Every structure is written in structure tokens, then in C-alpha cells.
Length: 306
Image (tube, rainbow, N blue to C red; front, side):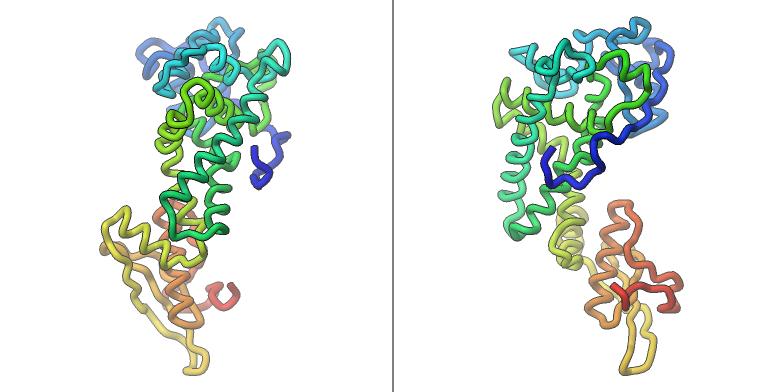
């Protein structure tokens, strides 16, 4: 993973959900969905299946290779590449047989592909903005979220100790995402990788563009609203407070008749920027950054402090 990643070190451990009893065919959403019932109960959590766990459906490595190719919508010419990409060091005969070397290559391929994507599609952003957006998209958290959403965690070939101890490095799932990208690149080429990443990371890019951009929240909100909602934001003055020489303003953004949490500012321009930041946060189901507490009072608002 790139050095720009600000996520916690990989030595941190995450608890593994208990692997459930072998589900019936009716419980499986499709071939290779090893613990489909657990994934439905705990969306976003990580699930590993030990290849030595004979009582688990699709636990053998051949089934994992088959399932992974279904997920990737790609059939490998060189199956040994995919097997290496899915093999954690705990399940490998030696470290050179694990996915660590492919992870090294995949990190570079991922970074280059995302950089070109952002460069071509967001010409209005500066180098600094593009760097922040790219860092968010290729971060360990984003890669882990994507790998888990795809189901790559269930395809990992791990040793018995990993599942028996029910803990593992937090980077394990994001690492397999990078190693699989490298395997796709070596087997299918850059176009195959670019096509897949544009599908898998579309939401991560959209979120990063909307939250990691220039800080001009009004501009970002306008671009988002026009692109995603076919609407242009308007700003409503809700209330003024204070004497003439120290007025504060409570302003809220409205997009397509939806009113968002208002924010106070020491002037209308600042209040509109904060209102736009609140709207972006709400649109992405995140906590709003500028609480107005009581819409009729500037008390407790951070406008004058931020």
C-alpha cells in the first residue's frame, strides 16, 4: 500500500465472525458464496474460510478460484496467477508463493489507473486536489471496503491458524484487492483492469471528489447536484442574529426541493460554504460538520471558530 495512506498500521487486528454451520443450497445465493447467510446478517464484515475446513461449502482452493473468476467476470488464461493472488502467506508453502509480490505490483497498477482516470475526467481540479482524491480512493479502507463488497475475502486462501485464532491483520483484505489487480493486469492487460476498476471504485471516486476537493463546498455541491440530481442548489437565508457590526447568518442549502441542515456564518459567504458542506455530508450519509443546534439561535455553532 502506498506511503500516502493514512490508515492504521497493518499490525492492528480485526475479529473474525464465527463461520456458520454448512448452509443448505437454499441459503446460498450462488456458487462460491461460502458464508452467504453471515454476509446478509453482517454486511461489510469480513469472512474467511479455511481451506482445511472440510465441513464448509466451497472451502477448497479450486472452488475459490472459480468463485473469484465469477466475481471478476474474467476467466484467467494462467490460473496459477490467480491462485498466487489469493494465497495469503499463512496458506502458502513459502512467502514467495504468497500474494505479497503481486500486492507490490498491484499497488502501482491501482495508483496509475486511478491517476489517469482522475486526470482525464476531472480537468477542473488542481494537482493538489487530485492527489487528495487519489489518496482517498486507493486508501487501505477504500480497498478493503471494495474487496469485501465484491466478496474477495471469501476467496482468500488462508492457513488454519488465521481462522482458528479468529483475528488477522486489518490490511489482509485490502492486500488481496491489490494482488488480484496485479493478476488481472498480467493476464489480461491494462484495459481489463481499467474497465473493472471504473465499475468497482465508481462510488469511492464520487465520494472522494465530493469530500476531498478544493474546499470550495459550494462549487463541489453544484457539480454534484447538476451531475447526479439534474438540479442547481439555492441558498435560503433563515435568520440573522446580533448587532449590525457583528451579525451572524443562518443559511441552508436547498437542492431539488430538499432542504439540508443549515449553518451559521459570520457573513453570508461563509454561511453558504458551511451550508454546502452540510448538504454534501447529508447526501453521503455522513455526520454534518456544522451543527446549528437550534435553528433560532447561533449558540453552540462553530461558525465563528472554524
